[in-house]
Image 1 (cartoon, helix red, strand yellow):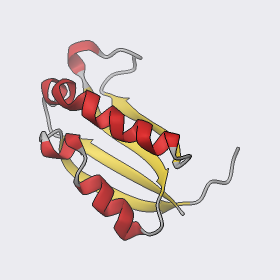
Image 2 (image 1 turned 90 degrees about the vertical axis):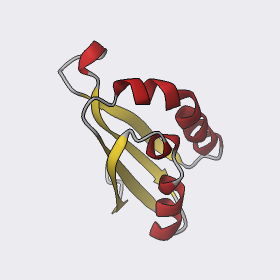
Image 3 (image 1 turned 135 degrees about the vertical axis):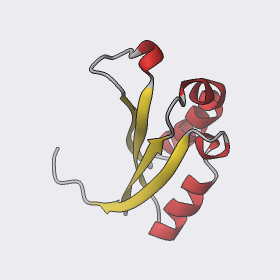
Image 4 (image 1 turned 180 degrees about the vertical axis):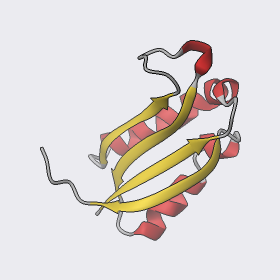
Length: 99
């Protein structure tokens, strides 16, 4: 089943994001290689592709896992969690309707 993983950043997370980004992306690329990643990306803090020092307010990942518990375990060891980027992470089942 698909699950939406919503990470909410702590204030001033940009430097932490930058330091953990390569490891974070590597995990997403692994999901993609397995055909289990629908989409992933950050929420810019301002209306801009490159928010600069304004940074980001969080991230959305939609990926396939056998159960919500598996999705939670995967999210719990994300490099952004370890680096203190996220104040919290929420996991919700997701059913794709379109496209």
